[in-house]
Length: 427
Ligand SMILES: *Cc1c(COP(=O)(O)O)cnc(C)c1O
Image 1 (cartoon, helix red, strand yellow):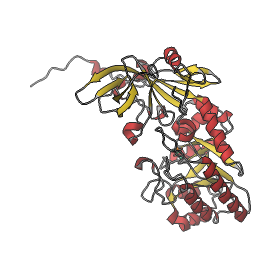
Image 2 (cartoon, rainbow, N blue to C red; image 1 turned 90 degrees about the vertical axis):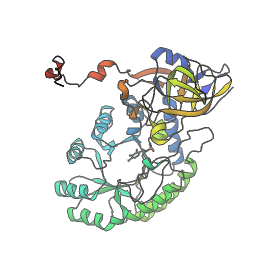
Image 3 (cartoon, rainbow, N blue to C red; image 1 turned 30 degrees about the vertical axis):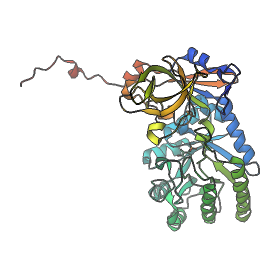
Image 4 (tube, protein in one colour; image 1 turned 180 degrees about the vertical axis):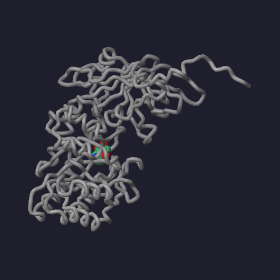
């Protein structure tokens, strides 16, 4: 019997989510399919809460990781706030029932018209550049409270594409401009209620949060009316067996005690915010796929599945490892397989991976597919996006229909002159 932290196995070896047979979910809703386990999400939220019990903790779910409305509603029910990076994510959060004040909007170079929309909606604006700060000052003066996104010049994160806090990154206002920031704030009398740093995803070293704390606590001296300090995210989740995770208990103890000391110096108790995306939804998600073809080449055996980088781009985009389970043949003899997608471009999910014997028609599960899975999916190769299912309280619910061919046509405009017969060629 094989048990790990993702789903559970019974004595018959069947893979279950909250006691529901995964193969039965695949049967009921079809493949390929994203399946999310609500219990895993709830478990991560409570883990964060217990790790930071000594402080006034506020969790803001980073919606871009997985934006399905039902997931957002689940987050709201659990009593957490939300962090959005576009005005459309803000609209989704409003639809899910969040109050505008529960929605933190962090643009990165977004259009001024979009910023104004977000302000019109009453979202908590997080300002990421000096030009935007100046524009806010000129337009709203002391009327609209803001937070400041600071770039601390700290390089961290699992992959360069997801490092956002190093000195050369486009994100945030460089810490070096501390004097200029304060100058603009004073010139326009802009109310600053929060300071924020998000340094990237998948920190190798949890102590990076303490370095961030130093930068934020230091800068807080410039702003006496703060309500919150936001540490962004960067929580590391384990992707492969034996991989490590951010030690939340340890981090909670260290950051909380530093934060309490800071609040004492500051003279008031502030909110300590985090913006986890991956931590809350990665492990909860499984991408179930069907095996189309098992193809023996002289050098390797390919498993070709009914999905590809159009549904899960992380292996190609970030060289990410996703653990794979053979759900329909869990006890077969182990062999080495290279698991690839059906896209006309190299889309290798795993190279020479040991899996229980894979046969055409088997169902495989890509684990840790909840974060940046569906939300980064596309219709490349004119393939439709999968359906999504949420298992809540032991029941699988369809939370997004599988797309259809009609969805691919929606929005395309027919230009009549292009419908004329073949034009005769002169050469
Ligand atoms: C993407 C993002 C997050 C979430 O990062 P994870 O690594 O998924 O937890 C948090 N805050 C901001 C501003 C982001 O852009």
